Length: 490
Ligand code: F6P
Image: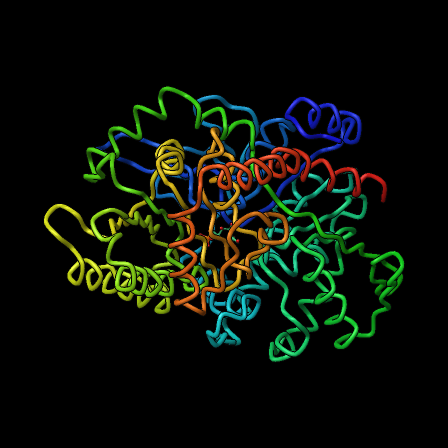
């Protein structure tokens, strides 16, 4: 099994031969911008791009994505191509340009205003608007054309990412008859009762059934999808093959729990650069060595349960005053989808919750919560992971949650406690975490206390087992399993 960059490279060589390998996603892996008049590049905060970049580096393939950085056009050639990573090129990125209106309706509107709440079932009402749906279809068409320009009728592997492109598989099948098409759905799939409120459910399902292989994080989402299809359209589920046959075409449905580059993250965590960075972060944010550090790292998204986490901290400090001035919680909140009202109000809500806690309990230089509302780079995040005695992932619903796995990979001396929502896909694998119900803040407060008081042998035992799990099921193995499965269908 491909579980390292080298073995994945060999597998790719064996399975792909000279065929093209194309990844399609909405979010691009590298973003160009101007800073003080000079062109700079950054990496976005996105589980998908972080997970796929290592795969692309070994495959040297082509990545097609929406170019939305302020300096993206200047950094790309006339056809939207740019070599990436910019400092050490290993593959090509083809940027697709969208108009402001397309972006607002396809990305903010249908993808994040309708499909995101629909699939996450996080008690936010999805908004279905005809004009958003139209733009969604239009952008899927545009991507289909752009990918078809590259592969035409040749044999190729196309690997589509996520809920932005439910219609793309079928559109591509029509344009590129010799391509093998796989899609990975990075967010949950709801049960049929929830999905049936979507006015365009049939088109979405038919679009996705253009894939040869369709992956979800966990089996439960696969089952939900199979049941949804069974209820909604005239397609034949094949329970034995875990496949669906629609008008003679078969789509295999499988669970592939996504992961991270365990070795790379561990290596970085163990480096002296990380120690130095942790030191400078301590100074910058006034985090005393003697304090017990709790950590949360999230995009500012209502599915992540950040206000619920603050409510749990409030109960914890009220019920266990002995931990005031001893435990500090560092919350990294990365602004996300800021055009949407839901996200703007969450932003205010988190800010208010932090301020309330700090006013209520703060004493001299100690504040219970240090709020870093910023997009920290990966080295700084790893330094924070290393520093944190415990990490809280309190998602109300989450496909996987790679922050949990990054934290595990960063605990090179197995010294840290993970509090993980039962409703995150990662909870299926990381059974040695303290599994929490974010909807029950008093319970979470108790589990924070448990984390703070856990003895070091128990901490090492739990973390050691989780590290083994993530070491083994890493991103290369994830990509390798999908590739192997897909190539068997050729
Ligand atoms: O989980 C789905 C996902 O698309 C992930 O890539 C990532 O964590 C997040 O959502 C990114 O969202 P966006 O690309 O909208 O910023």
